Image 1: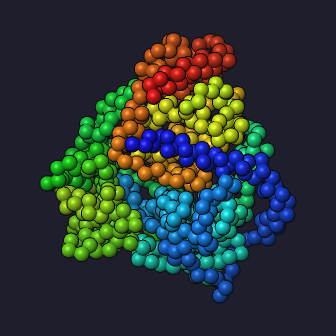
Image 2: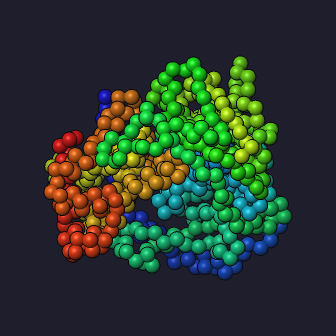
Image 3: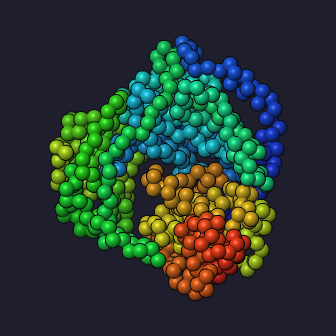
Length: 410
Length: 180
């Protein structure tokens, strides 16, 4: 058996070797060399740039798909401190939040290919679309100061139905709908060259579109943030069908309190931390409850229950609200479960899960292998399982689990 | 594993991969024990430890010895990652991605080993310390109390507190190193 910490040490040493060649000092010199003309251009844009109406031009470009390939060719890691996702296939996956009491969508991107970046990616926990929250998810690539330094990188934004396009700098990219997105919602996917300003979302009226953030760096960054180097960022602006910029004023909604429980069978903290003395079972008065039958070895370890349901107001696209979550272990594999209801009208007929396809021979069951997610309809709820060793294991667990209570009167 | 008593600041500032390796060896036990006390799943422990050191490598020039011992800096990184993972439901991988580190596939035996390392009893390790050092290490590193508060409680200078924490951590490192 190889010691995993020795493998990690080796990976770190290789990474250190790469960064040694491109020392921070040299990297900052490279940026400083361009800072003067860049700052002039950006200053001009701050003055001239505006978020006022601009008719969506015919020159708006189409979005890249949710699954595609980054331009360029995959290269082996080189000892020059750079990395690249050029040539890799990418896949963007949007999945519902399973956390009890919460509604929202998580977004992830994964790179696949025969190269050192294969299997890497990013993820973000999102909210949901409302009139005041037009962009609610996405992954923007690693921060520009230390992100891909060769080739293009992928930026994706997940938007509400009202967003016809997004603008970044002087580019306008049309959004699109997909069966792999929440029904009604849209997405825009685009490539940006290495070294581009960092895209940001959530632009609010009065804020500049182009601005800087200061980050500590270099051999002696000091403790005064005013002396740290500046990095350019650029807001990704959502546009409606007329080309008007849609401002963000979203505030996080109040959610139902979720009560935690942990089974004595859970692997417990083993040192000076006080033993867990909290609830060991889901609260019996939880509005949703799960039970299991006929799958020895399926062990519930912890989860959350809620005592009342809080329907979501103002959401635009498809949205689910979880009324219970639990984590199970089976043969060492963790499987996260949740029961999803319609977020606006809990107990009413549910929409489809993005990307999930019917499983042949298993009535009511759907599967989305890229998201490691399987689900089964149970009345007007989805019983969802994420993780595990694969589709077969998830389906076995789905078969063993029941929603034993679903009381939406509270 | 090399025996090298260079200061952490020097190991981080040199930029040499071998020096970072020495730094990793020196602090791996304590970081794993810290994470293992707060997280149960071995694969998550491993990811958190990996991201902690990746972030330390990426930002090694930010470490300032004057602000406290390097183990405190590392544990601060680990603590932030744990909190972030709790909020997001998964462990941040941004530093590993930026550094081009390949994901490490873990088999059952390796997971057992990680769980074992994460279960190193910090309390036992701390028990061997003189009481004044133990209290300071727990309050400063585990409970994250500021030096100024500790100094005020003990009615001594901040420098004295720093010295006690530093000595305690050095002894703790030695204990954890032996257990490994």
